[in-house]
Length: 399
Image (cartoon, rainbow, N blue to C red; front, side, top):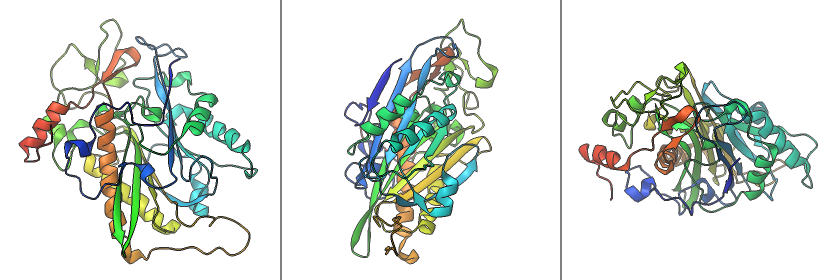
């Protein structure tokens, strides 16, 4: 089994949206990531091994786990939070308690669909070893499906992989693309994965940050847009295809052999919008849970700008938290908290929409072409073709 712990973006070679000058609104924070919100840490464990025909229990393996610590791995103080589902064909554990309490306790993890249980249990074991932990836990673990390219029924994510991501999480730049829980994901019929972005806003003379991290695995090519440009209608080739000639193509994959060069915007994984996207929104603005529900809801608009419409087969599940109001969840007496008035929240809505849209694009820009189970090849978004499409619509990108 190949294992890679990725805590920074130092090895990331492909440009991000801001490097290309993609015209998505708003002021980016220095890292342009969720870790621009002070205290937030992100860790990945990436599992890549094997090639060729799928053998359940052996591989090929293209999967992993990503974790987000809202206040850092050393600080167990809960944060106020809320969640929202645009379409519920997916899973995010622990959300009934988030809905009831308005509190996010512990880390948030994202993995593949069939590894939710082991990741949840590993987080509990990790928490129980830490001083001051309460005697029960309801971890938040979300998923998207990587079974097109990975041996999802081989259950390759183990507790030690979760511990590695939890303990290795760091602040600073976040690695994107084919990493962590996003390793085997397909987004808008290009290679997807983990992406992040952030925005700063000024409200009443004070600066606040909104950071977003996505695991994108949703959507069909025809609806794919970049800053309003219908890129999916301009790039109708580079569809998912099978690179191996001696492997039977599974009918549910709906993809051709790579030797068949005919363009087809309706072929390949995700043609009917099947897939999912998980969005995690962090902010340092002082918001209460009902306001964070409003923030989580606005992530839907960022997904829509990229080309998602919440199709029947998609699990589009979002969670938002605020790192303000430290110790608000303590039980010793009356707690005093701060909040922005609802009338001042519009800049945060704009920031959430823009950062979500850009995080999705960053995931696709960072992701490299991948071949997985049965030789299924998922192409990276081709930068030259993206530049051509953007220029055609009067939005040229930097070289």
